[in-house]
Length: 90
Image 1 (cartoon, rainbow, N blue to C red):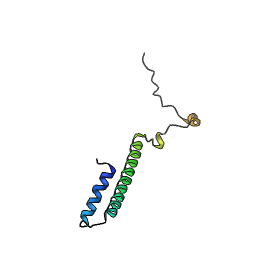
Image 2: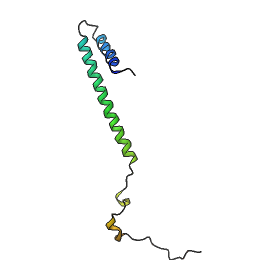
Image 3: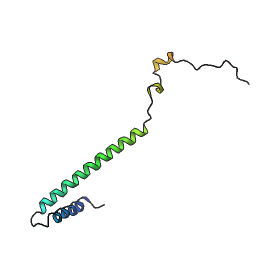
Image 4: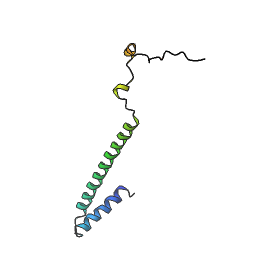
């Protein structure tokens, strides 16, 4: 990928051609290309930030309220699983 100044120069050239190659508007075309560059960089940064958050969210396990582990003080209220009443064979 071209570096920043090369990209802006090519974009400014495109603006110049699109306007019919007028004389004396090089600063205007450069400025327009610079704004284009900044907008693209901002959009790419937002996209990267959003992707990073989505990846982090996907790696975080989600426990439903019924599956959440009990709080330490609530252990007295936890019931043991029911037993079948059968004695295991040895």
